[in-house]
Image (cartoon, rainbow, N blue to C red; front, side, top):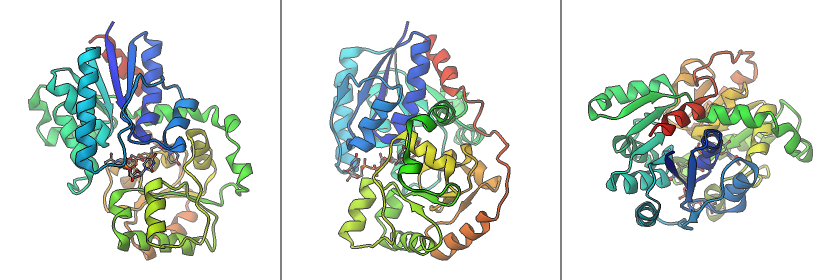
Length: 358
Ligand code: UD1
Ligand code: UDP
């Protein structure tokens, strides 16, 4: 049986790992979990390990709050040490964070096969740290598990078929996660009642992308839209620590009270019962769709273009007027969310079956 070493570090990876860890366990595949420590607050990290099916990390490097180079470099060094001790059959990395790139780079330099889950995505914006991370990770991987047909097309356009890499359509592992945990989230979470939220009336919003938080013009424009909207709607903003710090240090005022980041069960309940979503998150854009909600994407481009093409999601950038107008338009929609661009909810099982035969 192969021995799989999984590298996680940031919130989206904990969520994705939950599905793969369960599938590995069901297939009796040994998994060693390595946590870089990139995310570390209780509600950004620990809560996911407590609530979801993720094994305890065997290693946690506690590497966070550093510049991109320092963070990635130090992770690389620590992951290499672990790989030399554990000698896994393959290393699994998810998505596009600094932890993803560090894991992929450490393994590939030791000629250990890299398995990239959520491969082939592109925003075509090389200023995004995530775009750099995902392109480099794809290129040094041995297995690229793609969540969408668009992702496969992107890889073909970059001649990945010539690089001797296995390119496999798996569907989106986040869809597996959403389906699985939405069955129990209603029993586990009390956030809707506890927060006095009116079902289908509130707007769920998340905001953390560097391109928004580190550009005060963009940040002010988005916050201004949320402040205006808070006159008509309840706004629920589980606030990322990066965003909280920047709002506070720049004295940018919210007309509504943000809440701490929430665990996945609460997040699912908020997604199920909100009126719509406004976000710059990659994962939340799709989760809105999984739960039948329109989503305004507060970015200038997205990796999940199919949802925009299908008129479920709307690109609103950091444009106050566009955000408000789009909320008005969307609030009248009675669209049916009945297409399936993200597979059948069995991505993790498909990936595990490949890993079994390594
Ligand atoms: C990272 C990922 C981003 C992903 C996001 C998910 C990179 C380059 N970026 O962005 O792709 O969408 O995670 O949430 O890897 N912080 C805390 N407590 C925490 C976590 C972070 O205070 O638990 C603070 C850090 O100290 C730092 C800031 O938030 O000052 C940013 O953290 P960092 O991990 O560098 O990037 P994210 O914005 O979280
Ligand atoms: N998420 C969560 N609680 C929150 C905000 C987000 O559980 O307060 C979940 C979200 O639903 C998604 C995951 O965290 O499944 C990753 O989202 P994030 O926005 O952190 O990262 P991205 O997808 O943009 O990389």
